Length: 213
Ligand code: OMP
Image 1 (tube, rainbow, N blue to C red):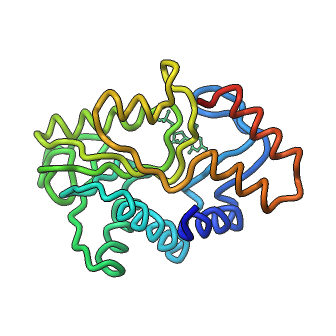
Image 2: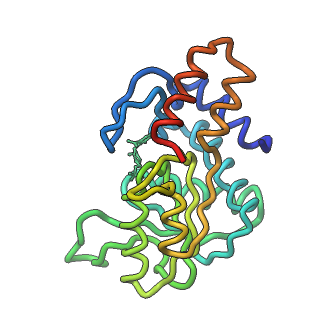
């Protein structure tokens, strides 16, 4: 694991953005853990999350022209990561996001920020089944731009609609890379070395055997 991954993992646990217990997911699956990106809800917290995204983007080497954050949760992620790339890495990065409702007055349209042109990198919080990413790809293509890849905080490494993981499906269907800051595998390795709770490690491993790839 890179330092930025380890740092995010321990910080997310500290602020309760990464929680262990019993959670029902969008897919209906019962999960022993949940990652809530919405809890990076202060300037300092968001700055730390954005630093990790910026590091993951630079590590991935994905070439892109515009950073795109899907409404609603992707909006602060795109904005804050564009700030981190500019102020910490000297990379001036245009960013955009969508409105959920089209606007018929003023500047109109559904895209706010820089126009969606060229290679567009999607930034989102978590991929479980990949529903949110599919919607973003359609919006980008409808604007005449091309998706360049996806960067997420957590890849839960779960089966999607077929036998492969949702991330593999996105990579295969659209031919674009998906870079995650953390994966379920990282979480299990971290718990295994840092927590004294072997019951939790086992619950995570069981979940992975049941729904993972
Ligand atoms: P997909 O759109 O099916 O890939 O599911 C991803 C979404 O699930 C995220 O954008 C969240 O709304 C939600 N989610 C989390 O935020 N954290 C988790 O640990 C798990 C989920 C989830 O419900 O699967």
